[in-house]
Length: 505
Image 1 (cartoon, one colour):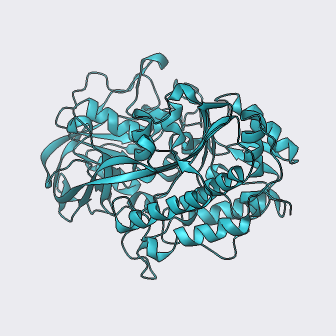
Image 2 (spheres, helix red, strand yellow):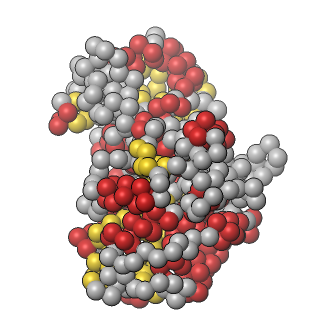
Image 3 (tube, one colour):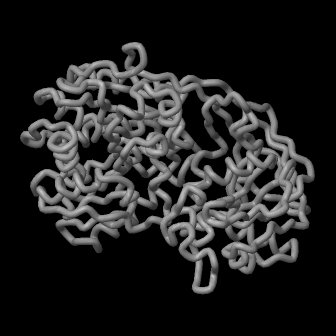
């Protein structure tokens, strides 16, 4: 993380970087606190949030930072709709679909019940309409009142020679068209009553256990138009989807190939979809936490450091009976990193530009806190010269490289490369661009409004560890991904956080 300080201080802020002050021990202590059972998994709108917010503000006060929120406050309100879907019946034709096994369903609408009777199902391929790329998967289809069934990722994700989608969407590098958020949004724009995405682990970038982790719970920001989101959204498990298509006399593998061609047209399934599911909902006001260190020369210009404080709260018991998903690394460690950067900067002479430390709510439910901020920013995008976001850091010791998500976005990357070189390290672009990580972290909310950003996210590839190289790095990554969004993403005293802090070995 000293590379990050050099980036911010030496290059963006025109101040002397001084000696690194980031402490692996403090990182560990902070994560241990945030991931403790008393914080209840840090879900928005819960007692765990209240405890988290109070603790974060206390840390900023202790380092003599100033409130960075609206009207001199420490926080920015994030109005949310909080829903919980109960048990009910779901059918496709004569086939019962079991929640959590065959499908994963939720709603972000503030309704008492999701009742859908015999809605036609339509397979829309990858569900992309991109005139600038000469692509439209919705030719001649009216989705009003229907269930749209999508493939995950982009049309060229699995393209082979001869597929005219090849190279149109970045090859293996996911575009926003490949994200589940886009597909649900597009279904709503077209009047669909529901949207289902066929899950496969390579295309999604995570397994079925990650999909089902929220256990029917969901959040959304309060929207002026409730119809801006479909009534029912979710995923079809891959095997269940294959069987469902076969019951309509359709071969899903063949349709996958057809969907990689620009002449693809939507295909109606023979089964109608029905669901009767109770919903409980409430309105909750979550909060972003914002702190600042005013600049000495150009205080109206801002460099922002960000992470998300929320995790997944409580869910179904795991094999050991644990229900709390503590989010120790995702993103407790990112939050601890932002706090350490703030402490480091606070202990040194003021920088030329103001520094803002933003800890967001609702990232896990669709970047909700950062999107709320981006729509109504405390610091205008035109005056925000950079955003650096930390979301999951590696815990396996010093590395020879810095993993960067979304390389090629802006010239901040040159500054990061210079800072890494000063440490004898290199910047490694993400090795798994098909995961679409660039669209899965809070920096994206401000990046799409024109703010230059850098995203450091350790699950973007195997780090080149000082001890063991990329082989050891891959072992670390594989181990962590088994705990991604699960109860086992927990604090561990054996973590080697010198890699997160990147202090001398």
